Image 1: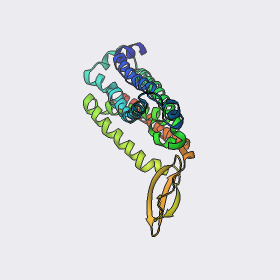
Image 2: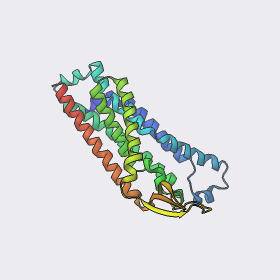
Image 3: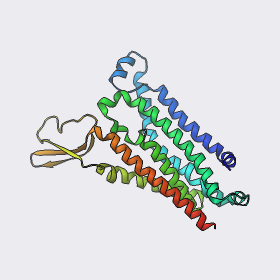
Image 4: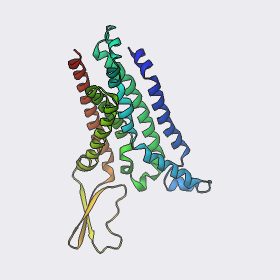
Length: 268
């Protein structure tokens, strides 16, 4: 069954491998960030252009989890149901559970490995700037949250595809659903993993609110003659990473369990 799954999805897996490895290659070409990197590369021609290349790749890295859900997750089951090709496997003595399990393990495993590789290279590129900018700046692309996010969108696409059973509508629904979930995490959940700290400064301060290296700023409120700034300190980064990655992995497991249950119920 694994061999059949490989033959069915090898072109899609190859396409994603090329995309993710191209990102890795661009990071290897880009100059790293930070004062130390500037010291090393100042004399090199085109240094600023190389740094800009890395920053551009970092920006375009953000939609990758959504693409995983749309193009790897959503068609995984919906395409076979839509075209009726699932009947071949099910009439050869393969259970629905084994049929889906082989697909999820193959494609999901590839998603995990490739996303972890991209995230590791991304963090290595950013590392020289981390003491000044802080790791919170690349929270979504870090080594725990980024692979967990990719697995979540993959499972989301698989579940939506199984429920809708039509590929294009499943892809569109995955796009909207993933965007809504990411917005929920960024605006509601993540700021409240722990109680934020606050710091106050006079409204008349020339330099504005005090700068806290690597902090995750939530916003400022003016109270009379004082400005109160809410933030999470830099040392909470890994705690927040583990919390958010854990939530995404729990959602991934729940979505896959829903998919297995739905297929057994709908096609029993």
